[in-house]
Image (cartoon, rainbow over all chains, first blue to last red; front, side):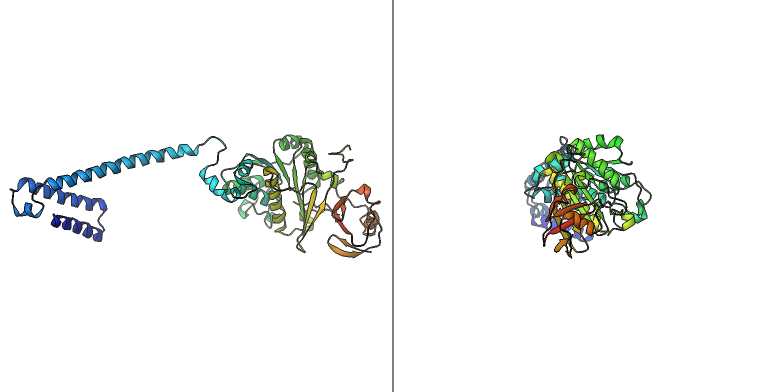
Length: 347
Length: 65
């Protein structure tokens, strides 16, 4: 019996050394086994080969019985595993809104935050956010909102990507020059996070659509580059009772506030009753702007948005934060509503 | 009188916020103002008396995005 086991071992070892496939090696051992059993059946009792291989076939047949049992067991196990694998894709199509395994892993760093947790991430997923302007401020705000898992992100802008934008508008790439900013931004966000929905509006925000569009979202971010649109967005947000995360900048200074009269905070027009005279608030094209500055302020806008949606901490309502990049200073001033504000007061 | 204007020390003569804006050539400017971190609407500038050491913020609305 020992001789046969040694021969089987030798077959396996030599096969392995020569790189023979496993199945072939098992086949060789199977042949050896059959030869031994055949020898027991055809040779007379007491033959030297039979004496050297266990005297009769019973031991070999019992061994074969064990092998068959093991094989049946393995086959059954494989069947069960295959069934479990088939069931997995079905599990991925959970009731709408439930987090997939991928999402849970992706947002794990949010979920461990005491102020957010699973419920906070859930609120982000259910939130509808509108970003007005896919420029310097919109770029980082959109990227971070998409990455953070805000379920539905609308973005409105009528510009196309220009070479001179790319020094600061980091959501757009060199290859996107000439493309509508909202579509370039959409592609970047969907590449970053396929689990969210992006709604691009390739047009200028005007009186005709501002009301309906803003009313259809939970939080509005204003990163536009002109005063007219800022006043329009403010009026529509006050009318719809929506919080307005407002960022603005030029050169080395950024300003940030959350305007929300429905929550007791002032609106944009409480603070800036009249549009600035030309020259006082020049645009980025005229006055210049430091490339990373909109990165700072736009990312802060995304932070305020997450806080508004989840209720974490206290948003910058009734306050304005001024970031002076040239001296690395931030200053905050407390803002108050004006009773005579034509937009949110008695006029 | 020494005050802090937009984070920088300044020596000024204006006794109230409206005078200060005139002194700085921003009397007609459409800016927001705050004294000691508290917003002061345009209508209350003339009655907002300044004291030495006050922190005055003159905020021109930024327009860029």
